[in-house]
Length: 351
Image (tube, rainbow, N blue to C red; front, side, top):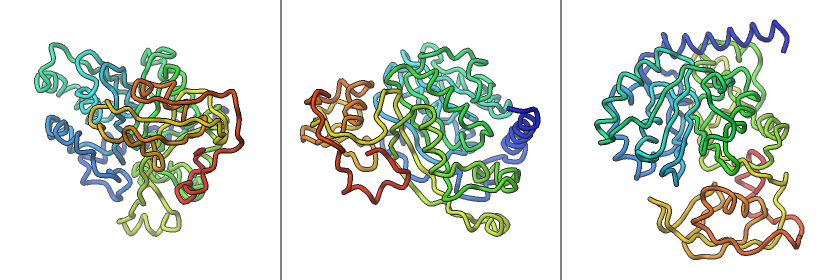
C-alpha cells in the first residue's frame, strides 16, 4: 500500500470515528434504515435483550441479528462492538464459562460499554464478568492480542462496510478463527460499485452506504482468500429516507444481508458425493429444525441430500454433535443440483 492510500484510509477511519463518536447520539439520529435490524429478532433473544441496560440499547447501530446458535462455553469475538449491545446478548448465551471479546476503534463507544459492565455482571448473576472490551482496529486484531486459531465464532453487525481495508479485515478474521470456526455477520451490500466520491462522503460512509460492498466484489475478495463457500441467512432491502442521500445514491440498490462462513477446506462449487444429513435436534432454542442458510432448513429426523461443502459445515464445526451425516468423499457423482434454489443466489452462493 502506498503512502497516499494510507493517508486516504486514515482519513476514512477518522471520518467514521467522528460520525459514531460525535455526530450520532442515539440510533434516532440515523438518516437511513441501513443501520437498523432487517429481520425480527429471534424470540429466544427477546428476554435476553430486556436484561440489557436501556442506554446500551439506545446507542445500538446494527443492521441485523448476527447471533448464531450453539454458543454455550464458546469464545466469541464481536468486531465493531460499539457500546456492547451484542456483546451483552452474547454474554448470556455463552454462559459464565464462555467469553466474549468486543473490539471497537471509538473510545466514546467503548467508554459506555465499560460503564455498564458491572451492571450486566450483576444482572446476569455471574461471579465474574465474562466480557472484555479493547480499543483497536478490526484490520489489526494482533494489537488487541487476539491469537491465531483462538476464536470459536466471530460476529460483526454492520461494521465491516466501514473499513477502508476490507480484505485485511477478512484476513484477520480467518487468522483468529479456530479450524471449523464460524464467521457470522450482517452488513450492507450494493448492486454496483460505488464511486470514490460517494465512498468518501462522511454521511454516506457513516450511514453504512458509502462503504457497502458490491456483491460480486465481495465474492471475489473471499475467493482470493481461499474462502470458497459462504451462505446467506437473511436479506432485506434498505430504504433511503433522507432526500439528500436519495439525490446522491438513489440509483444504487442497497441490501442488508446476514452471512455465515466457516474456516473449512471447501470446493468452489457444490459437488455431489451422495451425502445425506439428519438433524438430531438438541440445539437450544432450535428443537424441531435448524436453519443453516436461506435454502437449508433441516427438520429434526428428516433426511436431506447435501453437497460436500454442506456436509463439511455440519461435520467439521461445532454443529457436528447435532447432526448425523451419512456418506464420505470416496465416490463423486458430479455437480450438486442447486437449480431449485436459484432465486436465492443473488451472491452466487455455492449451494
